[in-house]
Length: 517
Image (cartoon, rainbow, N blue to C red; front, side, top):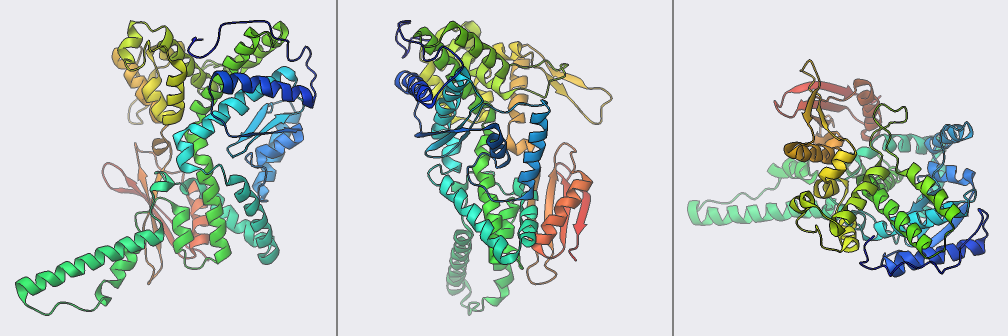
């Protein structure tokens, strides 16, 4: 660890605990000690923490409700709860030691079954690391409002309950089922702050039409000396189509604003699902970075507590076992392999940044001239945690050393070729190709299908037309496409046609149609 901010080692402190048992008073002392290092020495900037100790049953419930303390009722949450509980009871999965909500104050759940070492680790991981990340990362700042999410979640729960009382549970569930099926297409690619509202877009269209007419009037006066056109009826249809702001990639937003037959309470349900999907989107885009930040913080804070003599040797050994389990990366041929472990890669890159800042070699100076050897790992890490998301974080900070440590290489899978091809290995050109390929895996624009509303006949057949842009020959699963169209047709109320169009040739490769009864 650099001496950028931490004082010299000292081991004069009294251990925070000497056994695995703990009381609420012990927990308070642990929290104070962790905060002393996290805020006092590392300078982490946090929302106020609200610590809640819960049982394993309540943790399963928090899993099912996506971590929010208040959530509306829906059968899918119960199904998720039952599935997770079955796996947990059979010992086929373990529960996370903690869960934290991106809110102000930040709600941090601790399992009461954790021993004192685990509680200390969790507080350093979640209450310090995740909390700092939530508060400072640009993606979270642009997409979420931590000050209002808890109140909004409570409003949502009460609103859905009132809808069930007034319109029936079956009708509410049917609308929510359809909204949930489309929630991946209810998120803007750009930050919501950059999107015009429908009213703003409509006003923009009106302003442009006014400007065009004034320009035409002037031309008629100066050039032709003819009577200018006066009736607006000839362009009403065009104005109506323009007000739809097509193409529109946010299907839930389009349906919420334009679906002909939806009741006001149904539009509000669509808005709720869309809002919650947007709230969780930064967590998807920063999963690896967020966990890397939290792991780096808990590792640094626990090490510092040990240096201060506030953790016993036994507690430190127990922590190292816990930590190594969290950041383990199984090899590709291991039965436990399920892709790249975000905890492992995120922690490795953060540690690598720290090394490059303090002890760079020639390779590091060539790849990272901006911060290699600057002696300021904390400032460099905080800038990375603040300004990037997973895709850009990999492009900016993944070093050849980490590529070698993780044995990363690029495999090209061309459907038209007979064999798989190794497209990049560990050489100068290969490092850049591997980094670019890995970054693309974290790019939400690459990993999600590009589906847009392209046309809607609002005065005739009312047919809705959707386009899926087929990239690299990847078409939609036909069965899943039909199931999703069924939900889309229910919300739109009229025929819906989905065209799959090849990105390169522009040819339609498949068409799916749904005609609601």
